[in-house]
Length: 254
Image (cartoon, rainbow, N blue to C red; front, side, top):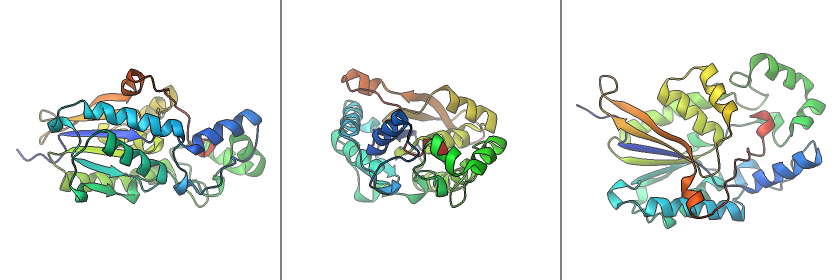
């Protein structure tokens, strides 16, 4: 039987970022704008985010080499690339240079005119967008210049096709963002809008949490990936590293 999927697939949200910290500060002060001097693509990890990434890397390193990732795909955004690099180093991942891949399809959802605005800021500056999002729901709402969750899913369909074509039978680690983690669940598990939004409402995806799939040859005609764990943070807890689940700086538009 031809196996079109990886043997294992880990999907990891990046470590805590400076944007997460700035978002908390803006919300606490009731500000309209999140004060951060970088464009979203250039937001770095916070010191805690670096610790979280290393702690998760140590968890991978504790596994036998034949059970560690042998391919890493990462969002091009700085916080994700930094997380992936720390995971690679701390996890003792022996990778061919061509198996450490920056893939722009794994980038954060784009927020357009709502970028850097808190919930209060959106209500004050773009009340019509707040109302449109209320009516459509965040699955379908696309802010001007930005993306809906459906738009993210469309590019992720392409990314999964590439993974199945080039990484069948491999052990693949994806490092990305909260919306991407959720939208990959939608695709890999055949969820619908209601179930996806229910999962999202239960809890935010924690920084450096692990969502893991394992290949099950008994699923479908050719086998498929089965969810093994979601939002798994024990690797951080084992090292006494604080767990954070702060949404990204653009949470109000997410």
